Image (cartoon, helix red, strand yellow):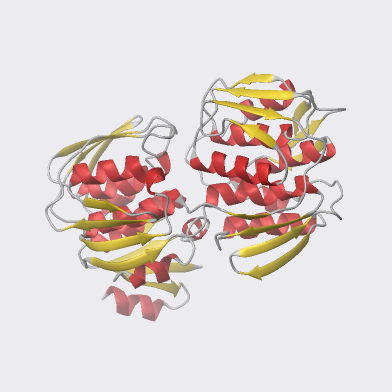
Amino acid sequence: MENFVINGGHELFGEVTVSGAKNAAVAIIPAALLSNDIVRIENIPNISDVSLIIQILDRMGAGIKMINKNTIEIDSRSVTYQEVPYELASHFRASYYLIGVMLGRFKKAEVAMPGGCDFGVRPIDQHIKGFEMLGAKVETINGMVCATADKLIGSSIYMDVVSVGATMNVMLASVLARGLTIIENAAKEPHIVDLANFLNSMGADIRGAGTDVIKIRGVEKLHGCTYSIIPDQIEAGTYMVAAAACGGDVLVKNVIPKHLESISAKLEEAGAEIIEYDDAVRVTRFKPLTRCNVKTMPHPGFPTDMQPQMAVVLSIAKGTSILSESVWDNRFQYVGQLLRMGADIQVDGKTAVIEGVSALTGVKVKATDLRAGAAMIIAGLVAQGTTIVEDIQYIDRGYEDVCEKFSMIGADIKRVEVSEPDVIAADAG
């Protein structure tokens, strides 16, 4: 096991380059199996969730060729139907995309119930509803989702709640179905558009991605392609928030500024200055932070995956801020860690009232999930003294070279083996 050791109190200056989008990659990579051909995917993030999905495809018989750490070739011609390995699929949420992929290609699937970060129940009822509307029979047996269909036939599917995962999974299952599938009340996140663009590059016929009505006309087969994944909206937002929290001047490169508008708006309201370029945003902050209210919403609203990071900014902003969570039931687990650092936060259900304090103090904290882990890094960067972040395996699920990237913009952060207590003790002193 490893920890991050962070010496805080430094402003951030320099440039950081954002990697490919995690939430797009974990759907696009398994979607390559739908082609029965060779697919080349570029700009994949070098993170543990992506490594897991590649291992699963390898186990299923796909030919995997790593061109470099961010480019992969997947040859699906030798893939045959088999149960997705439980020990791999049960470790992360995106394993459920394999249900849609396998159902689409083989008309049957057995995949472990999704794992990943633990901040609330992850129902897949909307996924199952979509598969059943396409003609599949779906059962949950001993922690496995088992889906079978004689054939898949297009249908009109209304999502009872806006669900990113269900929208993408139904897209995956329906591209090879007969006839027209219409997804109403669809999620509109950038990675949904990216998945649609990827599938269309392989010969699918998907229209309306990015709106709340997506139409998929089934095709006979898909072919190979070369495709580059979009930049990661949440990684970009994390570095933007860090620059605003610490102060300084940071250029965040390889981004799509339009995807970041809701984040930029709240950082400007809190006292940062944002300048947009074609494929970069510059964040500067030299004046005190001020309070603002934030409510997470489905895209194009403020992303739930940026909520913990924004809480750090608000914890040191002058005045009282209200942070409301409308997506997940239990996303404030990290608050206890910030309280240990001196934050003044009261949580009531899905709302946090944050009274800004003059400073946070470095202590030992835990990453309770992926985005909370990113928030702990930012909190350590703004805190006085040394912060040790434990359970950083959560952070590695979604951030490529996070230690190196933060170091490039002036952060004092090191990855340290837990078995080196002398190093940690020395740093903590």
